[in-house]
Image 1 (tube, rainbow, N blue to C red):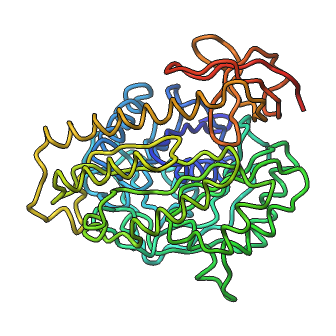
Image 2: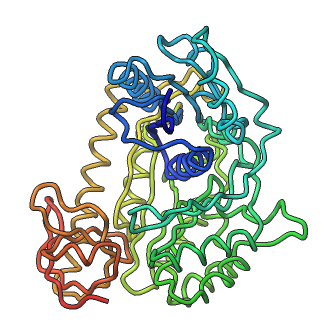
Image 3: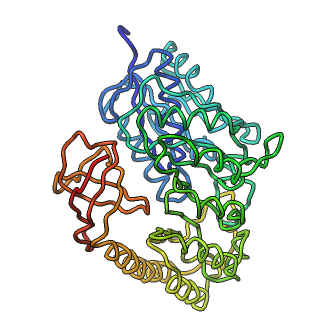
Amino acid sequence: MTGAPTIAFSTLGCRLNQVDTRQLQARLEDRGFRTVPFGTRADVIVVNTCTVTARAELSDRQAIRRARRNSPDSRVVVTGCWAQTNPADVAALGGVDLVVGNADKPRLPDLVATLLESPRAAPRVEVGDIADARIETPVLPGRVDGRSRAFVKIQDGCQHRCAFCIVPLARGASRSLPADVIEAQVRRLVKAGHPEVVLTGVDLGHWGADLTPRSTLAALLQRLVRMPGLRWLRLSSMLPAYFSDAVLDVLTTAPAIAPHFHVPLQSGSDRILRRMRRPYTIAMYRRVVERLAAIPGVGLGADTIVGFPGETDDDFAATLDLVDTLPLSYLHVFPYSARRGTEAASWSERVPAPTVAARARRLRSVAAARGLAFRRALVGRLEDVLVLQTRDRVTGDLTGLTGNFVEVTFPGSERLIRGLARVRVLAADAAGVRGRLEDAA
């Protein structure tokens, strides 16, 4: 091999996986690797997998096959959640050279270097006990990528054991990054030109509970919202149980907090929530949403699972009724997917597949109508937007993201990308939201 070895990445699943991939990229580039786009020839291809649903695992398999097909001489490394929970299945796929679980991601640069120095052999499996995993101190890359929004992983793992969820087996127990490390990372990202920073985690609201001395998400937010140059601090998905009065006080009063929150719902039936082992009730959920809804122009998102084992017509009707009364701006609808190793996977009260599909279609129809109504309410308003790094594929116009998490397309020059702009919303329909540039920051 001559010159710097090349490496490509394919990332499946959640934002957390994307953050992990960028950390792996930074560490490997520090070791002398040169990153090339996925789909081109590379010495090493890393596929960072997801396992939250059966569809996710199908996408994992497709990405691994594509890696081998597009670059047959590459060494293929598979990591992430599917690698952690089902390493034997991953290793059995043709063309996989190395399987690295989430617990061993910090060792991946050393493992990749060794792989390149070794002759091709049977797949090597490096998957340790996720209970021993630690959260890594982030490596800040030597260059800032072209993304408008920056993501900071402040927490990993989960303390809950929901009956349907494989994530604790894939990610381990809840563990937090120290506040000083988070603040330093956010400060550098803002200085590097990122007006928006998104805090991510598996069980975000549990941040700080494992630190010594113990801390809270409210205390962390109070530190970060005062940072000069930060336009928006956005939270990723967070369970309603974590919206304490102290957290809500920050979210509803600090100008730097983006007016957008994703509060997982999963079901509008308390009976199903108990079967799911969810740590909240519908009454608690309503209280949180009503408090957040008082924020002017706020965008509120949720996700639901339809067809959970034992879900009756009455349970589903309760979900429809609740969604109809909540001020949601969008809703993600997922058919239940049994995950091996979870409690619900062994239950016999399965909802017939045609019923699950019909319920999903009906709830998605309701969600589409609610989302369209929210977007149409923006018409005529002047909105601050963060101009994203990619243009609209149909029109070629710029795309801006509002504080309440709505994408608006509008004509504009390349110099606006990654900056803030003020846009007048002109129209909204099922195809999207369109606007006109009024001012650029």
